[in-house]
Length: 314
Length: 247
Image (cartoon, rainbow over all chains, first blue to last red; front, side, top):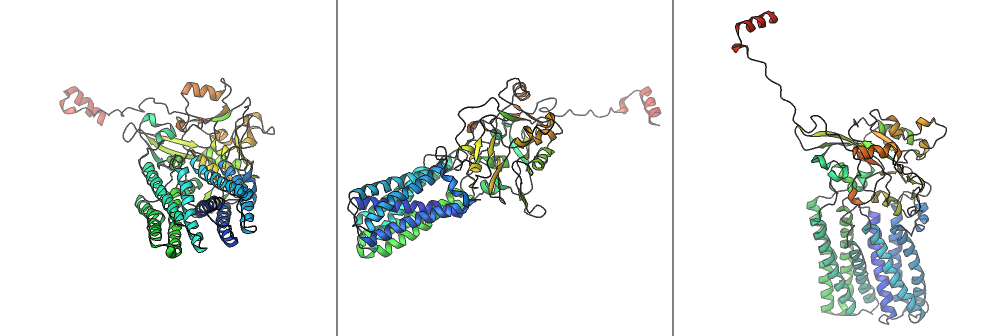
């Protein structure tokens, strides 16, 4: 599948944004984070900005962005519509919780309920995003049980790194934040290793024989293409990354998204609060790059059933 | 509504494509483009139509496959492919806007081009590669089963068939109602063993394909020619006949 940069930015930025907002909400409601104005403003502001940038960039790959509002209507059947509805609905508890924190310095009572709703809705929205991909039967690299947990854990892990950074910036950092981020990164690494092993070993469900129904007569081979130039289907679904490059990029994603941030987090935990800010910033930067590579691979390594007709594997 | 219709009408319209008689002439694709560039889905935009890197929207694409390995048993099969108007079309249910829909009355899968936002998700959901983006208009386009031709009462009744069916010179394409067990298409499917493409995906296409026939020589080696008889061993009379005839 063609890895559109707008969709990569959308899924990674909104994932991190929702992860950060959910963690801020949980820790603020639990009284772990103080209800101080600037912490709330920067923390919630950063989360909302990431979500907004993600949602806006997702409209850039539309053919008719001015009609994007129509995408909220078909939530009964479409995960994309559900994602849109959930994303907009999440802004309501965020607004209530944010006003309480930033302007009234209160994250208890009704505002704690709004915080809980923020965390739940952030979870629901990321689930919807993942299901857009996981529900497509045409793409075996997406249509499996590992897609949804990977989106959730990577969103939470990148959000947790941002929480470490923001809390260090305002002097309210706790080692538990770094431990949480590290735990999520370890789970994320395990999920991605399991995912890559799964897509490498799973047998394609369809072949040119079943696609054409001609398998009963023996081996089927493409003799002539229907046209001389690449069509929309081939450009959109036929994107292929060389296996050699995919291996290297998996290593890059593994190092940048998981290994390096884990080392930096361990250093931060070991060396004490003073070094958390620079180490956390480095870890966040590295993980940001890593998650972009991971998401690029998620698209580039995905093969589409329609390409079987063009003589490729589905 | 992009939910599938819960009540279905009397008709289930679709095509039967005969892989035995298709000669791969691309007339279906050409006539489809000709009709549909000025009808319901107009225009079927072409980009760089007369230069390198030309791209454009086509509802019909004709592939050619070699079947049965290489050698005498191998055969060439021309394979036209367009939307199969599935009974369970995920391209419809994934649509976030309600632009993509399946008609209850005849099962035709259509796009409302005034509602489409061009997100391309429907094309991702189609295993047959039947939907193509019109990059000039920014909306998705697809085969309509010539909805503006088959119901067009301004046309003589015999012309109310899809453009691809009307033009096929080898009658490899048939149009009809699969809900009627006695229709031409239902009978063809029954008699010739019509089948679904990629049945394992569960999209349950309405349109069917007929397999190529395995007739004389299709699966057997060509006959060897006998060498001319050697005249050296023939008798005097036959050699004389040979001389006379060779003059």
